[in-house]
Image 1 (cartoon, helix red, strand yellow):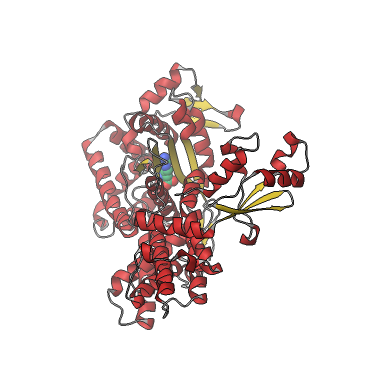
Image 2 (cartoon, helix red, strand yellow):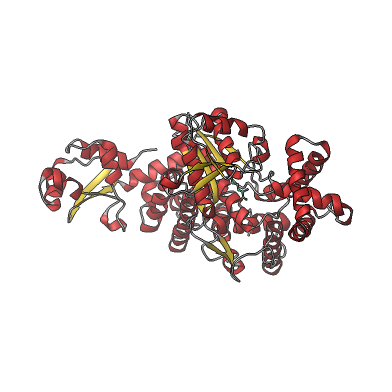
Length: 568
Ligand code: ARG
């Protein structure tokens, strides 16, 4: 689509000694539209031109020509303000939506680039809690948006399926397996076994020894231990899959920690070869003290590997398999140090510069309940399957009260309930800690998923009421020049830019905020304008705009993983 910012930058580049990209990076959006659509801050030139910004602005204004796209240029202090032609804008935007429909906003900017996104990555035989939910939702949104912009994207679920805790699970299972109903309630029962064996280990050192022995047996391929371990894995995965299905989340790879069990020797060899390993009390470590990053454990004194070793093996494997330009790790900020260490040690792995520079920890904040921090021991962990079901049930109850005759009630309740939870997880800046509160999540009028869905359904009912949906060449753009219509149109214009900033900053909340803004702007337009009108030309223009808004809301929501209901 036409890029007004670029057009302006090109005009400025003709009269100053700066390149287009640099100018583009300086151009701002003024705080309100009365001050123009774009502004160039002339103080950026003050040093080289040795003049005061207002004087530069006056001189530049004389030299820059207006045209069919840019209809007016103004000076405000040291700023040069540009006003774009709103008739052209309406035409460009609506024609582009007509052309691309539900692909509007997509582009090919990512072609030829490989992106790996590591997200969700829960631990086997442990509950999937709301921290994992946030991670899963954020990762999946990024995955969809990268793809939409043409990147070759691979999603990886780096399952926590390795380590001494599995030796413990096996020991518990050996001792009391029969007492537990693993088939019908796998995760809870696994937790019960785990808590019980942990207590026993604390009392009796020899049991702990047994557990370590079991894990070693897994590593050596002992058939009995491997069989039980696989049983835990498949039971857990089946439970996790139910959650992924509800959320509509998919993965291209489930290569978890265990996948790297035979790939860690190479890491030790490489680090040994280039003298990066130190011995410390029988363990092999990389000393990162001089970088303020402590030590990174590669091989413990008993010969077993660590979480870090497996992540290093994963870096090497992903480099070779995917030749990535970016490898994103969507993981809580609690693991900041871990990833700093991994990225530092990765420099010793002889991998291409491109991959090294592409490693990035996309850290997100904690999720807390209104009642405080979660704790497994105190039973204040909310389990995600229960949470999602509760969201659906609560919506169902609201529908029963407000709209008992609604068609497909169950399906719609699912879309709304799940949509509400997803939106809540992506709507604030991801690094911020977040509080989970039912009243905010399900509020139909607040800045929530249900609100966006509600506005979408409103656009649909406008089309239904109109009965006739005009063709783009029946739309008179001059009838969409009032303040509210223009606000909607310029928001629609911004969609692609927003998506570009999402991948630039790895911040899906920008899209969530955008959808709220579009919904609010459409609501204002709807309140200020009579859409079903005796003047059919006016009606056609407004109906068409409603349709365009519906298309963009639906596309944007689906990129976050939210489905739109047909009725509400
Ligand atoms: N399983 C880990 C946890 O639940 C997260 C793994 C994240 N990914 C990674 N490559 N380390 O804390």
